[in-house]
Length: 436
Ligand code: 5AD
Ligand code: SF4
Image: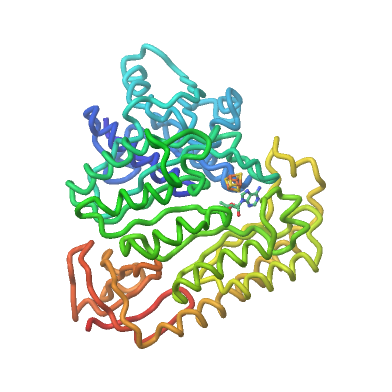
């Protein structure tokens, strides 16, 4: 059967969709050219904010109306449980995040007419599912840590993605070796809080050293792996052992996505983030002491219950002090079952919008300022392909995950090809360079 997958949400979902694609292909199904051509369409849903969930449910509703065989996977399924069929009466199947590996079997059962309206909410990983990779380019995502035990007050992730579980290092290394043999040179390790790798359950057979820095070192040894990225991080994980890895292993990219959420100590405490503003800033300073060009990006929530103008101003000033290279701003959305959902959502929609716009404008200015410092420097870039906006330009990324574009007439390497670009122009979100 021809299939198509729509993915909403974070890189975890992107990765899970890719694994489903690989498994369906292995089972003899064919990826369609587009949605219209597909007989089976799967929507991979997110539920981190209410709007995200509504989008995925709306999309699935349209597909059902178009009489496609329709499945829903991902975080919204786990949150809704059996109610998912109340929201979407015509849905054929729904599968929670940890058990997406059951999808090929479910599709076979639906095709044979053996079962209908299948719901799988389990927490037990399906053997082999994590390792399935679709044939793709030089970049790959690898899930190293599942779930989350942090229990931040606002966050629904622990409810829908389950307990924290570190995959065995041996299994991850074998997976990356196989990817490298297929031509993958850049891997991104994924986990909700990836620096907690190996803390809840042992990841290595013998327990010497900090598990995550050790994993990075082992991956850096693999032939063909030129770049190692990971996301997301927590300032508590910015340890000496991690800094030593940055110092010793040029493959480990000098970019960290370090969600801060707020710059107000009072709000951080209420959120249960387990660091203070000063501890967060200290972690950033340690990274920048190692390398002033170290790229630091973040997530921020505006309009958390009780967030005053002063709290908001503390977030603004923290963002300037940290000098974020990029930031993602989210308007607070209460999620049923989380601790903060019990508090009044008392910052008005207009005020959330206003705070969002202010932080976006600040980031434009700050992004330009940070990028301007790189004019005249030479960046090592891995080519990705034609730029989305202007096809005569090619686009790639430097180690700091910064987008760098250049004139394709000057040089047009294969995707994954390395080139050195001297930066001649800076913009808030991109750099323009020329081959040297
Ligand atoms: N409301 C708004 N933003 C949220 N995030 C997580 N939960 C919520 C929520 N309830 C944001 C955080 C997180 C990012 C992925 O989404 O900033 O880092
Ligand atoms: Fe949510 Fe906190 Fe886990 Fe991030 S670390 S996913 S914010 S609970």
